[in-house]
Length: 437
Image 1 (spheres, rainbow, N blue to C red):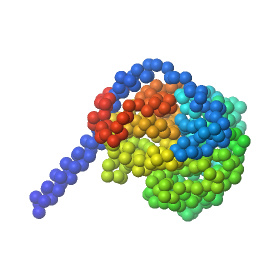
Image 2: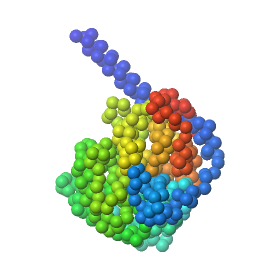
Image 3: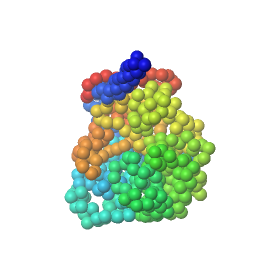
Image 4: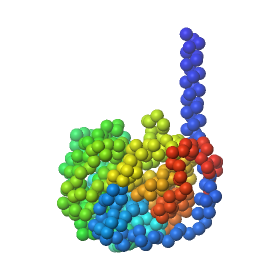
């Protein structure tokens, strides 16, 4: 009996030691390759004027896997997230550093033609006056409420020729998304007094109507991303329930403006669109549905193959095709990868995830939305490691991420001739090693 216990103890100890070593390997610093280093020494290519929403003929609609304009010309979403209005300060970040028009110019300079702009339901409910020190670079906004400032930011973006997609990010104004069941879906009235901010499904839709009303006559506000990372309590949200709510909300918004695109994210924190083929979103106006998926290094946890940070390319694209990419590859519906991102100084696991994802996105010429431009998080002004600009909101960070996204924006698919190979394991991916740029 003693020997069995000793053997079990040694076996478990060895197994957990192996897991610890494998996890530690993912966090080893990564060395940028020669191409990344060369990219960082050159200026960004100029903004591709033909990609600007100002050059398209309205209305936009969907056609197979693409978003197209009235002439049938594809409008590829090359987007960046600009967050803050969904967080505790109730406004998009950076307005104390740069004028909103300067930030819009920065976004164009980076090559993006569209912005995903999140908000919280609490922002709509409270609509507070914003503290003056948060608006020092935008003195004309001092004294205004949160909704007024959001409208001014949208106007600055669209005046700069940038398309805007509004996103209902979270119910309570805070960083998204934790284990709080009150923010795991669009309605939380079933939890009663447990939730600081409580809302019914009808109230959620009314908040959407309030947010979108000022943009009814602004054609460059092209759509509504109905809810961020629907998951339910411990991942229990069913696709059917979410699809029913999305249709109800989408149809109400289309009564305000039938030209808006209605964007519906997957369940399981935005990862899962596996049932969109058998139970598609159907709206009263045809050709308005765009699906959205989120893909991060930690996505895939709980599966046999593990998180995307540690997967081979073959395993990674198998998951993408199962979760959402079948809609694109089979030319059924557009899918906007509305959130993905990686840190400026990644570990080996982050770099492996990034290389696999961007290799695949380039291959299918995907619509995308990087998270995020912000160099600081709102509440405590801590550094945003995923940022694409320095603290001045002007100076770009020219690293491996911008190199890949510049190629993705340009539609350069790279040399991915065999997408079913099994290279790209995090231990052996070309360019992975120790140190940092």
